[in-house]
Image (cartoon, rainbow, N blue to C red):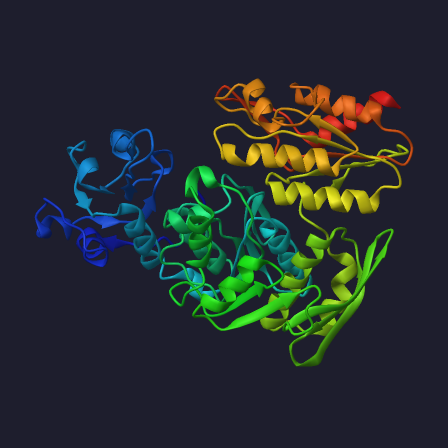
Length: 495
């Protein structure tokens, strides 16, 4: 975990007061203990830290207290159940240690996100592309910026691989503190629904929050679409933000516009009543020439190297927020040809073959349908799609994803994704339920090879589901696997 060089120091009694924690230790003893860091992972504990021991689905974090103590933890924050498992170290007890961890982490680092122009983007699809494009605009405009998201974390020129879309609160606030220390002006980050529901962003505050869209996903966690929307919409309150930017082409976006307490800037590809909208999109072989109208009659025109209607949604949001942050629209227009989409999002693999080949991260029914629509627009021949569904995740979307692949492809090949603890064959049966004569190739590498071998001049091959990922998890083991590499190998072998 990356930490600021100038680490703060707080006495444990003050920590207890900030989060209204109980402790069996004498207050005078707590005053003698200095805390110099916070971690929710025992593996990241450094001498002087307080370890946040959280209850989990399978085990309680307090069971790792001994590891944290060996690494130098000075105290542990947990709940009553966790406290019963810990001896030999001061323990602070709260009813909701997750929420307390967020509040504590933000306070400990003096609310670093308020010292940056912080932007949080949420939605089922598009988060990574919006944040990537916005980060590019700000960087190209001369604003040193930080980025936190699914693929990577960037602090200026330093790049770190991300473990999850939105980090745990202790890591998030530490990263923001590092960005502030390194004189970043902006922080652009993805905010997942899990992060909101699990209080990872508790204590955070954004200058702007953006909503891209909402469609079926993560129902293994949220259970219902209403709960899923509730988690997303909780970000759009004065507790977390000052301003909302919302895509009102999405039905949930229109609902959010009605219920949020924040002032709203609206976006639409086609609705000219929206604050930001397109007056023209002319598709070209390289992408498109766009004309964007913004608040106050702003006009931004230029060429963009992006394909797909959903990417124009993403571009529009990034531009609206960039202008809101103070970047000159004239400068943004000059930067349009330099902007690129995110890694693994409709990413081309071109090795001189006579058919198009792409990799995309689409892993929800709506995302699969949208990407295949774009593939249809780009192809002069057939669309050959390859898709799998992840194990130990939302099972209810599998058949819908299978139908989306079958409906949107001329040749549909069903394969494995990350089976995790499930059998790939069982997942594939759920994906192909109701589909006649489905082509199933469980081995993903073989499925990709089969798609490439099927391709003729003018066709388009698209491998869906994993995008930027570089591993495939099977029975608890993460095997090296990159769709882009496998696709390139198959193309080279065919040539």
